[in-house]
Amino acid sequence: MRSRILVVLAALLLLPAAPSHAAPAPRTAESVLAGMTLAQRVGQLLMVGTPADGPSPAATRALARYHVGSVILMGNTSASRRAVASTVRGLRRSAGPSAAGLLVAVDQEGGHVQRLTGPGFAAIPTALTQGRWSVRELRTAARGWAGDLRSAGIDLDLAPVADTVPVGGARTNQPIGRWQREFGHRPARVATHAAAFVRGMADAQVATAAKHFPGLGRVRGNTDDTATVVDSVTRRHDAYLRPFAATVAAGVPFMMMSSASYPRIDRTAPAVFSRTVIHDLLRGDLGFEGVVVSDSLTAAAVARWTPGQRAVRFVAAGGDLALVTTAGPIPAMYAALLKRAQRSPGFRARVDAAALRVLRAKQAQGLL
Image 1 (cartoon, rainbow, N blue to C red):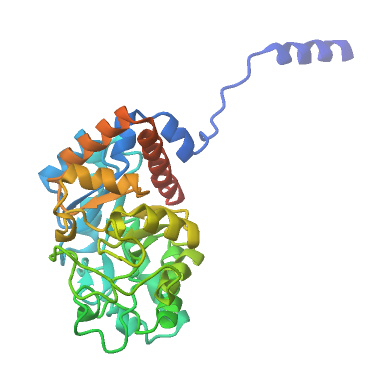
Image 2 (cartoon, one colour; image 1 turned 90 degrees about the horizontal axis):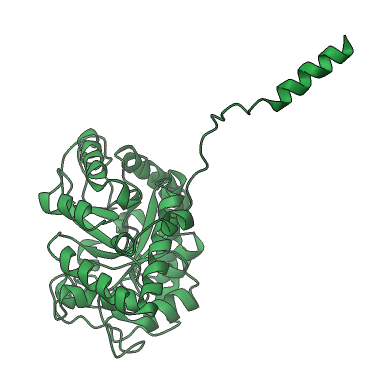
C-alpha cells in the first residue's frame, strides 16, 4: 500500500504546474520608462490645458499625437463633480497607453482661484482666511477638499501658494496680494499653513504643487500679462524661502516655478529658465527631489522666446514638466524637445531624468 502511494505522489510531482492566477506585479516608474520610446518620454514632459467642462479637440489631439502625459483643467466651471469626473474619464480614454497613466491637475486654491465650484465641490475660502485657522483646522479642511477632487478623478492640486506678501504690500502685489492668495504676511505663518495644506491633501491621496518658487510676494506686475517682472529683493537663503522649505519638509511632490526674474540670485534668466534657481537653490539648498513644473509657458513674461525655446530652456535648466494652458504651443514644444534630445546625449539624459521623476509621481498616485 505504501509503495503504491509513493508511486502516485511521484507521478503528481511530474505533472506540469497549474497556471498561476496571481495579480501581476505593479509597474514601477523605472520599468515603464525602460519600455518607452524617446518620443513617448518627451511626451511625459508636457502638460496641456483643456476646459474643465469638456475636452477641447486640440487638447485631445495633443494627447494622442504627442504622447502628452498630463493635463490641467482650465477655466472656472459650475459643472457638478459627476460631470467633471466624466470629463476626466474622457481625457483618459483619449490619452491611451502612451500617456502612462494620465495625470490630471487643477488650480483649486480657494477664493478667487477655485476652478471647480459646482455641486460636489465645497466652497473654499481665500488663503488669507485659511491662514487665520489653526494648522489642525486647515489640514482637516484640506483633506475634505482633496476628497472632492479625488472623487472627480483629479490627481494634482496646483496649490498651495507659498508666496509671502509683506505687511502693507497687498495692494501693489498684482499676482498674489490683490487676490488674497497668500496665507499671511510673514514667512513663519505662510510656512506652517502651506505645510498643513500639503499634508491635508496627501491624507486624501491628492498630490500638491507649492508655488511660485522662489516667490511672487514681493513683485508688482503679474507674469501672466506683464513682459518683465522683477523681484529685486529675494536672495539665496532669504527668509521668504522658508515657506517653500516647509512644503518640501512636508513631502510636497511638485514645485511650480515663477517666471519672474531674481537678479540677486541669477542675473541671466527668469527663474523658470535658471539652472541656478532650479538646480542649486531648489534641489541643492532645499533638497527638493520631486517634479519641477513650470508656471504657464504661454505667459507674457516668457513671450520673447519661441514656444520651442521655452520648453528646451526650461528642461535644460532642470525643469521636468512644461505646462501650457492651451494646446497651441504643444506641437512646437514637442518637436523642439525631441530634436534636441536626438542630437544631444546630454539633453537626452536630462529628458530621461525628467520623465522618470514624472513617472515616479504618477506611481505614487497609483496611475501606473
